[in-house]
Image 1 (cartoon, helix red, strand yellow):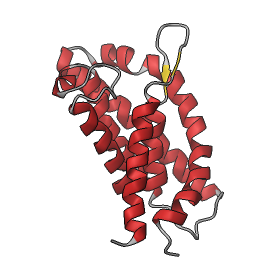
Image 2 (cartoon, one colour):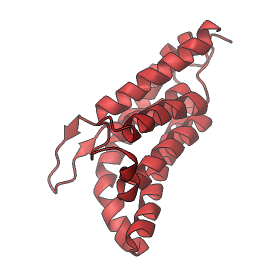
Image 3 (cartoon, one colour):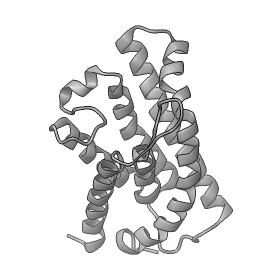
Length: 189
């Protein structure tokens, strides 16, 4: 196996582990909804590794949770999809995939900082966070038979401040991590 291909899978596994561990870092906020770093690492997996390998890291994370490994905020296993969290978990996969498709696999020749790259990472991150929330809202509506406004009040509004902070933090992190990842996963010019 070519070393860059092997490294892509290694990076995917590392990101899966970071996603799992990041769920345990909780920043409490007034109002009861804490900031959990998991979404940040979900989006970073796509913006740093690209669509395919970023989404593989999320699939490994989801598979671990479905197998019962305590990586979700509630007890795992297939039953997690019968809770409102199930929609957000589905959104995790699509968020990483879309963010990664927008950003692409990092290249060694890619400029470390350019307006085009910053804009791509912003659009990718914004799209990813939006997808997570949208999947969560529509799943919540379906699961609980509630209106769109009730689902937005429960599944979007409490998370917006934290997601905006993670969006702002994620852009410089992706800018810093993409050149590092490019050296190992995509040594093609």
